[in-house]
Image (cartoon, rainbow, N blue to C red; front, side, top):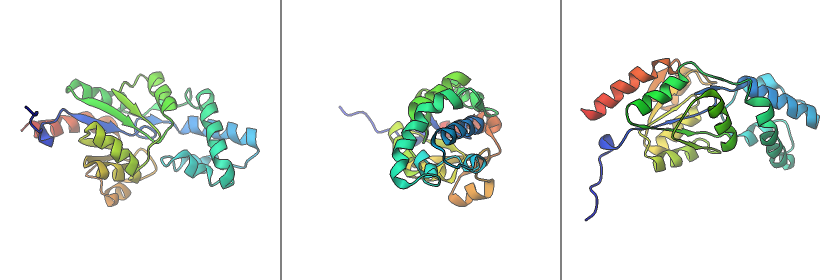
Length: 215
């Protein structure tokens, strides 16, 4: 006999999180990695500009500084040197550990879905003591939505309008935080359902959200 189809409100709680500038302030680390890349390649890279627009895929940013035919190889090299330069300087954003722990405390699953190279994403999380159930890397915007849908996420938390688009594809509630390059107005205009200043208010919001689902 086939199992009954669960209504979305009755599915186990699953919350997706972006990584860079949602859970992790990776600006110091990314800046260090780009400075090392510039020194190695001789490219002139405005590192301050790079870190002001973190979010889209690495190749998108590198295309501003390298000819198109060099971007794939330079991207590989950046990912290779990243652990030596970017992990140690990066820090957890306020409320990040508590936000992930809040999902698990309610019996839910926390899933990190990020554009970052997955092994490097896992290095950040391990160093900072943030413990999601699953980490999925190398996805951006709508492609994040496909993974979130496969994971059964009801909520996706991110700092970029691309994260809002991913949530929309997944049919998930979009919760934006203004800790990254997009302000509250941009996130709302893109379709975010909820906007918080940072993750410190997330556990209380999540408790109310889950109570509403249960009701």
